[in-house]
Amino acid sequence: MQKQASLSTTTRPGVAKLLELCKRSGDRPTDISFGLGPRINAVSRIYGNARFCVELLTSQDVERCTTLAEETELANTRRQGLQRQVAQQVIAKLAHLDLSTTHVIVLVDDQWPVGVLGLVAGQMAQAYGRPTILLSTEREDNVTGNASPRLARGSARSVNQLDLYTLVQGQEHLLHSFGGHPFALGLSLPLDNLSLFTEAINRQMRQQVIHLSPPVLTADLSVTVADLNQDGGKDLFKALKLLEPCGMGNPIPRLYLANCWFEQVWHRNLRDAKNQEVRFLKTEFMLRDDSTDQGFPGLWWGHGKGDLPPGRCDLIVELDYNSFTSQRQRKKPHYEIRLIAVRSCGLATQLPTLPRPSILDWRSPHAPSPGNPQSQPAPLVLKTCPSNWDELQVWCHRALQASQPLAIAYGEPDCPPPEQLFQQLVGVVKYLLRTGHSATRSQLCQKLNISPQLLDLGLQTLYELGFEIVVSDQNIHVMGYQLNGQVLPTVLTQFLSAVREAQFRQQYFFQLPLANIQAIAP
Image (cartoon, rainbow, N blue to C red; front, side, top):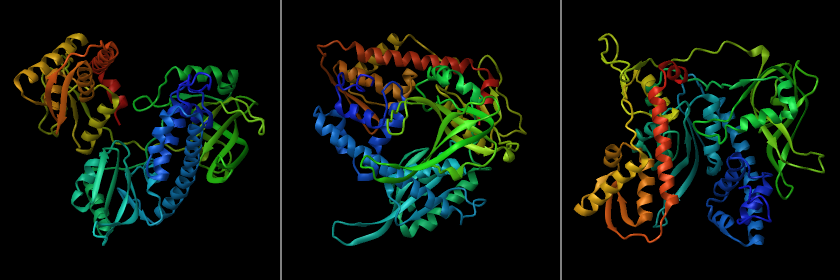
C-alpha cells in the first residue's frame, strides 16, 4: 500500500489516486477500512453497481483511473449526506414509537435510498440496543409487464450478538427474499405483509430475550489531556499502533478522559470534489482539562457543535493521525482525537448490572465429573474448542437467551504438525479420487479437526497443485489429478501458517483460566 501511495512507485494508479483523494499514505490498515473501503462501497450504494471499481483498481491508464477515482470520491461524499439525512428521519420516526415494547425496530419510508439503509440501521442498532430493519418501498414489474405487489426492500443489522438471521428466517413465509449472516442481512417482502412481519418478529424476539439495552461502551485506557500532549501525542500513538491491524476480535483501542471541556468549537458541512456542499457535518474543537494549560485537537464526525453538552464532560475517544496538509486552512499533519461518545459529568450514573451467564468449567482435567444438580437447568455444553473470542461470546449469548448455564467441556485440542495435517488432507483427497466417493465439508472438517475456513484454504492449495476438485451442494468431488509442473511453495506456506495460527489459538483457549472467560463474557 505504501508503494501505491507514490506515483513514482505505484503499480495501481487507481489506488494511488484514491489514496491521494482520501489523504492517506497507505501505512496503516485503517487506510483501507476508513479510506479506500468506504469509497469503493459508496459506488454500489449510490449507483447500484460497482463495475467500474474493478476497472479503477486494475487499469494502468492513469488518466482513466483519475476520472474514475474522482467519481468514486463524489459517490462517497453523496453517501455521507444521504446517510445523515436518513438517520435524522429515522430518529424522528423513532420518537413516535414506544421503545419499551419494541424489541425489533422496523421502519419503512417511500423516499429512503436503499444503498445507505444498512449503514443507518447499524447506527440505530448501536444507539438503541435493538436489532433494526430499515426498508424502502418499490414496485416490481413481472415479465408480462403487469405490476406486481409493492415490495419493501432494505437492510437489517443486529446488536449484542443477537442472531438476527435466525430471527428473520422464522418469518420466511412472509418474505419475498432474504440473505446474509447472523448480524447483517438484506431482505424484501410484500408491503402488505409488513405489519404482520413487524408484529411477528417482535413477538418472537420477546420470547427469546429477557432484557434489551444500549450496548455499554468501554475504554481500554484512562488518560488526561496532558498525556495526549506529551510529545504531541506521538509516543502514545506509536504504542497503540503496535496493536494494529484492528478489526473484529481486536477493536481499535479506546481512551477515556474525565472532567474535560471543549473550546474553539466550530462545525461545517463537508464539500465534495466539485466544491458542492454535502449535508454531512464535522465538528472540530480543542479539548481541555485541569492537567495542562494546552488543549488537544479533536473532531466529531456527523455531529454539529450543538450536540456537544455544555460544561465539563466525560469522553471516550480514539487517537488518530491526520496526514492532511492544507495551505489555505494553514493545516499540517498532526495527531488528534476522534470523539466516540460524550456525556455531561452531571449525567454520570451507576451503570445497570446486565445479566451474565453462569459458566461451568468441565474441561479435563479440571472437572472429572460433569454432573449437574437436578434443581439447576441443564447446561448448554460447548464441546469444540473455540479459536476466537467472538465464537465464545456467541455461545455465552446463546446460553443467556436460553436461561441455561454454559459448560465449557472441550478437551485439549489435537495439534499435529501442520505438514502432517496437510499429508492427511492429501490422503483423504486421493482416497476420494481412487474410490469415486464424495464427502461433505462437515465430514472432512470433523475428520481432520479443522475449521471450514482452513478446509477451503487446504482445498485451494490442492487445486493449485493439480487436483481437480468440485464442490456442489456442500459435497466435495475429486474428478482427477494432473501434476502441476510449477512448485507453489507460497500457497502451501499460507496453509501451513494458517494451521499454526489456528492451533495456537485453540491451545490458548484450552488453557485460559475460567476467571478470564467470566470477565469477558457478556
